[in-house]
Length: 141
Image (cartoon, rainbow, N blue to C red):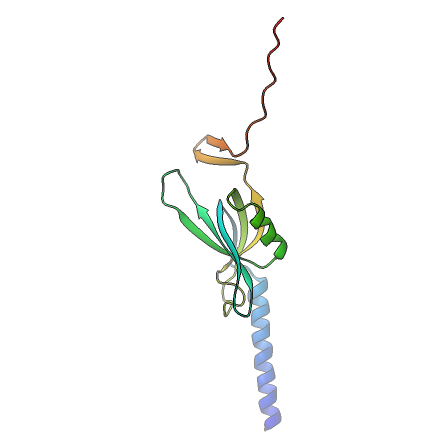
């Protein structure tokens, strides 16, 4: 009787571990979000994760929408910290069904950060974020 109970508990733990493995390695969706990183912090009581906030602004003067994200890779967290306050594109994977906040406070796990060179203001209107190189002076004969 005791052996059967132990076997059932081991089987249930194995199924739960299989579920966690599947939920962690399967992505519900992937995508990119562009905006300005406002915040990134290392937080948690037992399980420390990097949690961040990206400000999404579609047009100047419009209401700011926030994209909350989680980062597990220390290198990516360091990359995001270096570009804080600059316009970036974050590549993320959305994970559904992960229990507890030990995996992160959000469903969105950032896997890559890219510094954006231009800011679109409207169709066909781009503002470069870095100054253009100076043109050479014209020579007079």
